Length: 319
Image 1: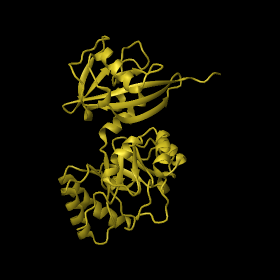
Image 2: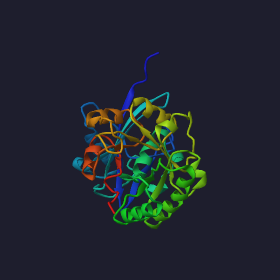
Image 3: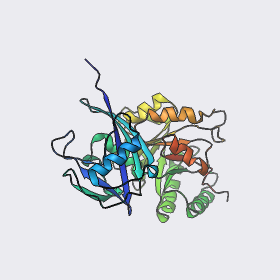
């Protein structure tokens, strides 16, 4: 049987005043009746930016400068009867007022209003990417609980990222759970989200947390997603096989590294940006670059297809 060809689709995420432009697919087409982001097939000889400018103008009347488009994520998905490669880009610089020029319903929605069931399955990683920040902060070593809380508070108050991972493998489960409650209070006071690190069952002790980040040694023990869909699931990955397993678990995002050598993992060689880029291309979920990175590396990571960067040193203040 002949292989089903892959269709290259340019997808545009258009922001205006904090909301995203959404359309409803006509009932008679593939995945009809579901919501979608504007865009369409990349024609032969077109760049993805050219395709987006053309498709969005044809569908909505909006005018977009190709240089205003920045990459979001690349998603490959096999529906069985159709294989798609979603090449997703975003802009906040569309000119004009949108209208459904092909008879489609269009509207502006807050990112928080986007739900998986309203979109084709392949769009789930796009929704995750739009909700996730560019920085994923990881806490440093816990030497004293009170000092740790003070340090977390100061780092958070100095412009800490929206998403923080409380990582403390040196603690017992009891000590970790106790300190996680205090860490959550700090995060809630600064409108940050707290991820727990270790076992899926941790979320039962702290249901107010945003989700659980599984180190690879934990992730490999599961064949299906181990926590409910209303929480975020993250997995630490280092190679193609681990990425494929994270996708199988329906992880919402992964960390991938180390990109560069890092003091937190002495002896581990950095994979470099070329290898990182190749691995990101194999992922269908958002990826954070990890390992020896600073805030100045965000553009490099984004250019390599990542959601952003993760790490300790770029935010954990020396107090």
